[in-house]
Amino acid sequence: MNMRGWRNERSVRTFDSTGRPVTITTGLTTNAQGHLTVGLAIDSQAETGPSATVPVAAGGRVISNLNLSFDDLAKKTRRRS
Image 1 (tube, rainbow, N blue to C red):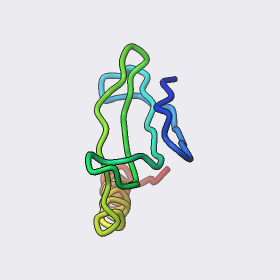
Image 2: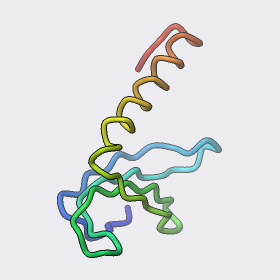
Image 3: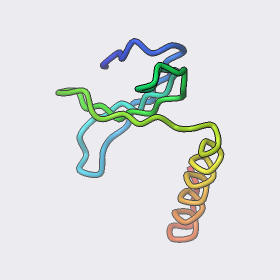
Image 4: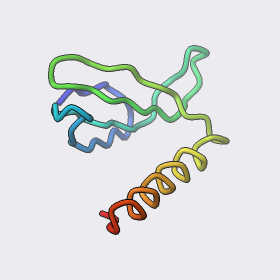
C-alpha cells in the first residue's frame, strides 16, 4: 500500500473496475496554496495514482453522490452492501 504522508490517512483496499487491486486513501494534505484540505486518492499496487482535494463545501456532495450511487446499485441489484 502506498503511504502518501498525509495527516490522518485512512485507506480502504478494494478493486478497480478491471479487477486490479487498488487502495482508496483519504486524509488531510496541503493544496497548492499551502492550505490544509481534505485529499482523496486512488492508488494501484504498481503506482501512485492521482489525488484530488475536496473543498469543505463539496465534501457533503461527494458523500451524497456516493450514497446515491449505492442506492442506484441497490435498485438495479436489489441489494446494498
